[in-house]
Length: 228
Image (cartoon, rainbow, N blue to C red; front, top):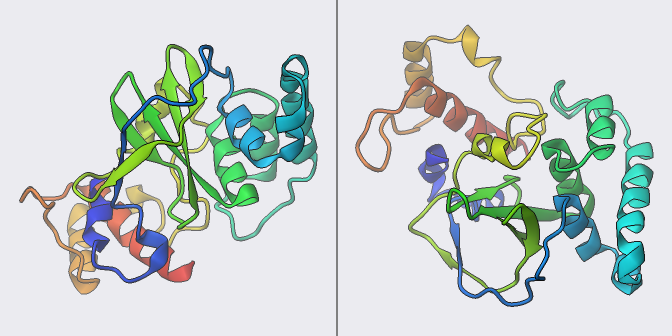
């Protein structure tokens, strides 16, 4: 997401890793067959009981655990309206729902960073400075890897591109209420004026004029990080 680079010098720790990209170094610790559901990787990595469960029982463990987590989901007034209790619960009843990743990030305090081999791009799923959990989508399956290196020259891509591998039942990584109203309520000129007041550059690092969506995201991100 290009707009994240605007905050490269921001001292707020929540935005520190958002401007970084992740590069695959090796393919160690990757099973021959990947998981059908990315939630299995996130839950399995954080639940000791899963790690001690025999292989034949792991799938049932994950199914039961997802239902258990879903039953414990409570309404949160701080969440955006679209990320409702019912949306999250419905997501856990299926597989590979983006809302499930967002909720599990908060539950386990991790940042699920996805590398899609089809697009050869990287995607961060939270703006918080949580411990990264690296997941790769390859050959119709999900894998966890630990051997990654970071580069400060690249940025994560927009999560909307994950629609080919996930059910995007929620449109962004902003789970809390945003500073701005819906983008349709603003004209590009209005957002440009707001960006100037917020000391947000009107051009990308490549010198191109930012489009309306990029300005909208940049303004929201700045206030979002401050509120966190």
